[in-house]
Length: 174
Image 1 (tube, rainbow, N blue to C red):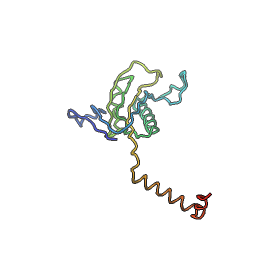
Image 2: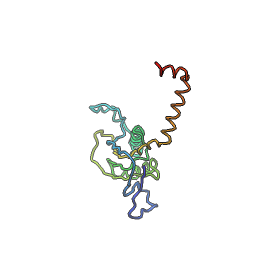
Image 3: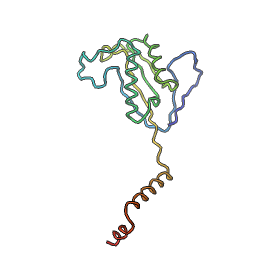
Image 4: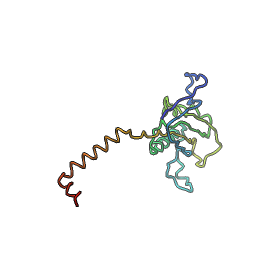
């Protein structure tokens, strides 16, 4: 997969924002992730308040969310760095800087495009953040002709070594 950050204007390195204007991607399959909250993925429906106990810290909740996103992307055959777009929904926009630090912690130099929105409420009242994501999983490289030919040759050689020539000739006559 080819990933290219599009920078039509200079970004200020002294500002640690988790922001890139655009990412151009070639050679991959799109993976769209639903919004992930910090609660456990196998929570009950309808929701039960006993499962709503979450850390009061937005950064801790962001780590829980990003760990879930990482697991989903890896289950789909990709890597966390294949995430190219996130939308961050925050209960309190003032938590943005704490979450920016976590975004840098997880993504490093491979920042995704991002949007941040403050919302009035979440389905789970103790949630402080929800993130949805898009990833591009690289296409698998097709086997080259030479590697396919080599594999066929190994299979033929292995089958010849297991069947004596005399028995093989006898089977052809029957």
